[in-house]
Every structure is written in C-alpha cells, then in structure tokens.
Image (cartoon, rainbow, N blue to C red; front, side, top):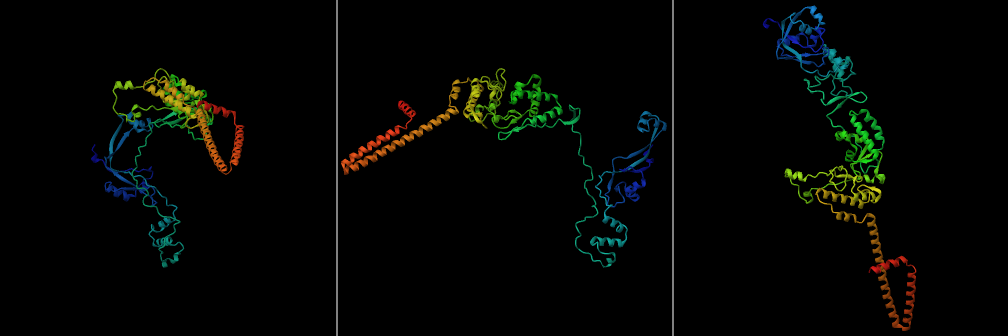
Length: 542
C-alpha cells in the first residue's frame, strides 16, 4: 500500500488530558489559529494558554518538528483474544502473531509539540484594576474607559464631573501596586539539563540496631579529636568519653572498631599517657595490626585527648587527667630529636644526584634486633625520633629520669624536670643517636663530661657563695681604706699640737692609744667563731 493515497494530517501534542475537544482547541487559540498554523505548514507557532479566559496568562509556544513523519496504524485483532490478556494490546500481538492485521491509515506531518517551559503565572482574578480593565477596555465602551482613567488619577472624582476633568501630572501613591503582570517573568524557555544521577559512592548500610542509613564512602571521614594546648586552662573531663562511647557502640558500622576502642580503654587504665607508636608496639596482636593504622585515629578520640604543645606534645592522655598538676606524670614527657644530614651540618646544600644501588643500600640505616621502635636503649638505632622518658631504658638516662630534680610547677619547655636535668638528657640522647647513625662507638668520656656538669642546685649554691665572697672582700677593702685614712688624720693632728706644745702632743698621743685599744677589744667581742675559722682557712690556702 502506498502512502500517497493515505490522508495527511497535522498532529498536535497537547500536554493536558483532553476530555473536551472544543475546550482543547480554545486553549490553542481557537480554530482560526489552528487553520493559520496548518496552512503555513507548521511555520506559524501555536500558543497554548491553559487559562484562555485570563488575558494575562502567559502562553506556551509550540513549534513544529522537522525530523521524520509519523504514521497512524490501524490494527485489527479479535476482541476475544484481547480479552484474554486483559486488554493489553502489546501482549496480545506478541502472543498471537498471525491473528491480527496492520494497515496505515494516516500520515502525520508536521507534528506540533510544546518545546518551551511554562512561564510563571500570576492570577489576576482578585485584582480590582484588572477587573476594571475587563469591564472597560475589553468591552469597547468609551464611558467605562473614561471612568478607568479617572480612577487611575483620582478616585474621589465623581462620574458627573467627567466632562470637566483635568488630569494631574502627579505620581500615584506608592502604597498599592495593583498593576497587570509583565508579558513574561522568565526568559528561560528550554529546560536545563542538570544531569542529576545517583552518587555511586553512596551505599545503604545496616547498623547494629537494624536500621538502614546511607553512607558516603568517598568522602574523607572527619576526625573529632580533642586537642589541648599548653596555655589551655583545663582539659576535657571523663564526661566526654562517657557521653560518646554509647553512641559509638550503637552506630559503628565496623565491629572491629569497637574491638580497638575496648583495647584502648584497657591500655589507658594501665598507663594514662601514650604515644601512638608505643600503643602500636605494645597493645596490638597480629590480628588487629593490619587494620590498626586505618582505625586507631578514629578510635582514640573516644578514649583520650591529645596535646598540641608543651612537654607532652603529640601524646594521648586519658580524659580527666591533667599532667601539669602532678609531678608523677613527669616520666611521660616526650622529647623529639632530629638528626641533620652531614651536608646540612656542614652548611652545604644537599646534592640531587641519585645514588647508585650499592651506595643507597650501604647508607640505609635500619634498627638492629627486635627492640621496639618507641624504646631507646642507647645501643640499637631506633626508627622513631620521638620518645617518652618512661620508654628510655638506657641505664645512664634512666637514672637521670628517676632521680632528676623536679620543679615546684611544670614548665612549658622542660616540664617537671629542672632545666639542667633536661639538658643532660637531651644532650646524651643526641650524642648517642649521632654515634649510632654514623656507625661509630659511643665515647663514654663525652657522656661522663656531660654528667659532671653542675646541676641546677649546685649552680645556684655556687653562684650564692661567689656573691657572698665578693661582698665580704668589698667590705674588707672599704674597712682597710677607712683605717688608713683615720691614721693619716691622727698623724696630722699630733704634728700640729707638738709644734705648739711638746707636753700637749705627748698627752694626746697617749689618749689616742687608749681609745684604739678599747675599740679593738669591743670589735673582738662581736666576732663569731665561724668567722675565725673562715679566715683561718683563707690564710692556710694563701
């Protein structure tokens, strides 16, 4: 059958559920608008107005499609066969391929379809101004039009005075903007493709309570660590862990996380302050070691807080414990050591030449034996550079840690230990680390030289003794000078008196001798025995 004998029609797609054909034609502008569009071959667009009674309703413009034509097919099948499939034509045709006939009956070109988005609509049903326009401008009666103009300028003018109207140039009141809507609200007529799709990283998981929740596995999990600085007045108390542990146990998607939290709770009961390296070495078994690195940083905030500055920097402290208030936590202080490369020590810029394989292997420094990386024993080279004082097993250093002098208040740099004690500890550790790094033997003479330096108490006592000795020598010098000056004055007086009368001079000399004798006896009566001993010692040394 040829399509030349098939009638051609124009197909119009209507977005509404058409129940009244006349009403549908009215929304498209009426029969005249349809006739004009069909005669133009679809070049004249149709305007679909969903509320044709409202002249201010913004229409949807329909345009013609030029790609291909549509064919209306007539399919004939027995009603009994269609009833067997509950009226489903597709299933009927698939089940009975030889029991129906198909023939073209209409050719649709062009096809008009709404390609634009509907604009925002503004209802004018309750607008007094638009109601006046309907009854005046749209009716074609001149008198209502004049009344409308009067109402626009002055609502108090009566209809009888219309012939005597003089319109004012003043602006109307700005309190009421009862005006018709603009011709169009939005300039966007084509839908924008936002490419919405389901996030492939979002998965539904079931928690311990059986509830299903969405989890985004691509985002970085946030850390809720409690960080404390040395200048902070207080530390987080135990209530933080008490309030958050039940939530963690109820919402944890990975049960192994709960195992690590329980393990950390046990370890922090044994020791209140830890480093992560020490926890990894002493708290883990082989079963948990493979997942420790990815889970411990999320488990630690439920058990302890961390220090950002001060002598306990980079350690985790059990909630409620403030090591700044009790010197029993002095042994948990940390010390960090950095070994500079040889080129950096000599002030040279490190070279960028790639070393040969043999040289690279020979220069690779690795720890010896099975010593944990957080322990410093002074014999094996550790991989870590940060140590807690309680993890130092070197006999010399352990003695300093155990019997070192403590302060009355903790210091931001040295903690509870005296400055000289911490200086000895740092210098000895650095000395031994450098020797181990360079593969050299540790010189015990250098260690002994550091240990022989005066401690804080000894240095203070020596400074006080030196100040006292200096003050005593100054007083003796001033007393000697005073005695010499007095003796010189006495000689001058005796010489003057003797020149006048020899007997008077002799009597004055005897009188001065008696006074000097009494003054000497009085001074010796107030001298301590200790002072004699001090002077005797000085004389012996001289």
